[in-house]
Image (cartoon, rainbow, N blue to C red; front, top):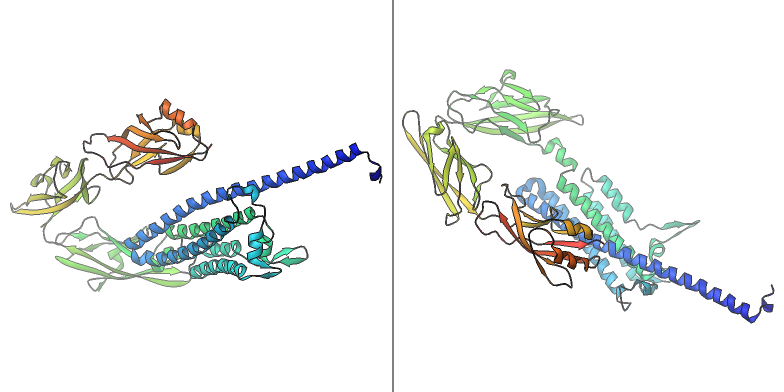
Length: 519
């Protein structure tokens, strides 16, 4: 080569090329580091949402365990065990990430996070793992094996267990002709920001695993939910009581009605006497009885239904009762929609005496008015106190009068939820969608159709003064403030003022809506 014969000018040009190439490599490295940082931010946001979702799943299981302890208490216990494992592992990773971030002046400046000294010094000593490195692997194994053990006796969880074993596998990684330890392969010599992102991804895997398990439990997809051993029997009747000599038309059905679910054999007794085949029929999975209701008093239907399952016979025990009464002696008073009455609305009521025609029944209470027949409406808006009593009188065909009464709890209207484009809570949408969307309010999970009309609300953009808006859409001032909002900032819609049609009482404070600006 004639490198020694280059002119000073050519040597300078060659040096500039080398510097230019080095600068390109440096810029590319910074772009990669920034990309890892942005990915870490997105994963962190996703993990926060998953945490809220998992907390809601656990709360739902807790409520179901309270409502149906025999069915959901075992699932609740396992869900909490899973939650403890997930929380402990997540907290360990969060603590480790915090220590890693403290090694740099600004943990949001990803371009300076190009060194992997912290993990290299704390996890490894040459080719040997230090106690901190062993603890990291132990934390992964504790979560992986703990979840697998908890779910091992639950049919239908096989795929989830397989995913856990795969996603949290720490076996050696094949590289070329040999193998490399899992921890070395993933963390040794990597930039700090890359290791942080990988740990955040581990947290995402933890939360995804917990979500899958809790969702399966909450939706009842476990095989035990559909096993014949978990069925029970129910009694369906056309009315609650029967007169002497009247034919009883009760039906014994499984808890889950299914036309394809039919017993192989029926072995039942009525008050200890075996039922013959002409005293019952099997229709759409139900055993329909055709027997006389008998004398006044309580009657017992006992025995078992025999089903075939996996080549074996499964016996479902039957133990039901029905009552035969000589004559009506009590009123039937019920709220059509709920067991309470609400202030501010017209509460529909059905009031009747069994065996007494509607025109021979009278009912009175403060706020109660008759519509027709057994249909009444109760308006307790002006009733003081927390209870109201309905007194009912019926006249029997022989002229005798019977009386009864019932108390109902009085409740205020529930707290309304603020909505944005029909959705409540915390949302994320583009800026142009925010400008044209409608602010609303609703009663969530309320039995009455009671539309709310928004008349006013406050619109708050970070760094901007709060704007009071009349109506249910953004005005020009609010849109101007919105245009100044930065991407990712959260807009607050607070102090929503709404009116329910036909309701004169003051509504409870409406919950706010938070909207993240997506662009």
